[in-house]
Length: 310
Image (cartoon, rainbow, N blue to C red; front, side):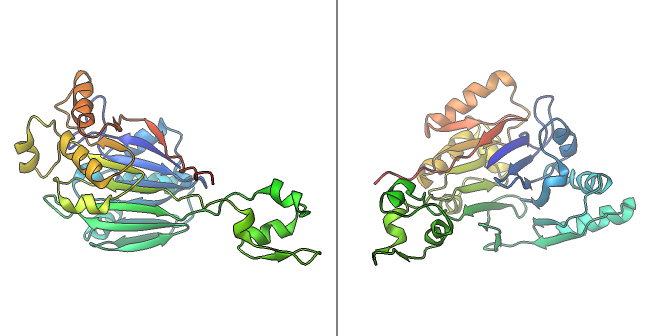
């Protein structure tokens, strides 16, 4: 599982940062997109992401720097021969925006498009991942998404099985499925005796534009990764508050209080140049050390937590 950041800037693009869009590549190869600002498809052209693998798009809110790339993505996916269903999740009004763009432009989609409008507390299951939704604090409805991957069965202790006379075969899968077996000598072997501790699923929180607020802390609690906006330096907190955004220090306070493992700062204002990035990330690290500031085309791998040996 890995994130590729296609656009890490705020309201307007700069020469170094496009507006918001982030691709999540699952272990299966499937791609989910979070937000789709203008020129997202151009950013994809210079990445390893392909539209044929894109199955879901999650929109945090309806400001232009998060949705103006949608018509182009939808059309290009069709032109490139996409035929499988594409699901788009987002706030109320998203369906009207997409349908209007498709109708007025005369765009014909070769694949089924399913649009699901979300609200606070909305929850859905996609494969082995539960997606939860929380309304944050912005000028318009803006949501955060929490992805909770199911735990995996622990590793089978093959050496231990062989030592008691259980050779590889279908019986191993039976144990992995949670079933006990009986050996020829009458001894019963239970899965708990030959399977290691469960491998914890990854929990990831992706926030849309938002002011600092206590709700985000609860929503992000104990996540492996928090991706949070940091539009402004902590030197201008009043400006961040006025425009319903967060500072670097505020994002770090959320990460620290929520006890997340890692924080990635995203959605950086174009007022800041490359020479400013070190200072911005230092502001956050002064509060929460395990912080990085993302850049366009950066890919971040999210490993599973290894179970502790018993």
